Structures are given as C-alpha cells and as structure tokens.
Amino acid sequence: MRPLFEVERMFRWIAVLIIAALIAVDQGLKFLAIEYLQPIGSFPVLDGVLQLSYVENTGAAFGMFSEHTTLLSVFTAIVVVVGLALLLSGWLRDNLARAAAVLILAGGAGNLIDRVMRGFVVDYIEPLFVDFAVFNFADMLVCVGAGLLILYLILDLVRERRKAAQEKQNEPA
Image (cartoon, rainbow, N blue to C red; front, side):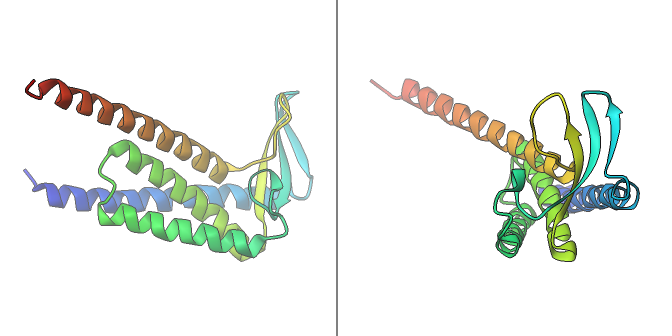
C-alpha cells in the first residue's frame, strides 16, 4: 500500500490532467463555434428549446462588466493561480471541495484563454425555453463547480455543528 503522502501527490497531478483535459474540450468547442457557427450566426438544435448561437462576450456572466475585459482577465488569472496553488498544496482535503476546485479552475482558465487571446469569450449555447444568456462549456464548469462548492460548505457546516453538539453532549455535567 502506498503512503498517504504519495496518494495525495498523485491526486494533485491527476487533478491537473483533468483540468487540462477540460480546458482542451472547452477550447475545442470554441474553435468549432468560431469555425462553423460564426459564419451562419445561429443553428437550431431543438425547436423552441435550444439553439447554437455565436456570441462574442467581452464581459463576465450575462455580459456584465463588458467595458472591463482587462480587469476581468486579471481577476480571473488571480483566482486561477490561487486556486491552483491551493489544489496543488494539498490544502483542500475533501474530495467534494477538490472536485469543485477542478471544475472552477478549468472553466475559469478556459474563459481566461479567450479573453487574453481574443479579447472576448466565445459563447454558443442558447436556451430558448427561458430568457437566459448565451453561454459556453467553461461557464457550465464554473457553475457546476460553484454549486459543488456551496454543497461542500453546507455539508461542512452541518458536520461542524454535529461535532460541536457531540462534544457538548460528552462533557461532564
């Protein structure tokens, strides 16, 4: 059996490989959107439900801060570097927190690459059944990762409260 330290180190490198793979998928999908979707604008996938639409988003979610692409790029770069440092340092011990970090880092890095290389983020998924922004694979990674992070924080809070209640119950009267 391998010592725990080696398993932890191996996980960190697997996480980096997963992040790289997710970034590659994101960039591949964006390449396809530029190559095939940009010339036609939109392509219906499911009538009234979903279409692919080429959008150049200079802002963040829902086009917010569109005049501050450089600021968004710097902020995203800081989040990615700090998050990667936390992941590689072993500071994140819970698997749910690690999974959240992997998804958030991959999505953030995917959109950061767009901002730096193109000056905008390529969006292409447009739900038609609801009034919602056009988004991309990287956005989905960040949202799912954020959801997992919130779930982790809630579960951690519940564990801490249970632990505190148990310790209080075990105190001598």
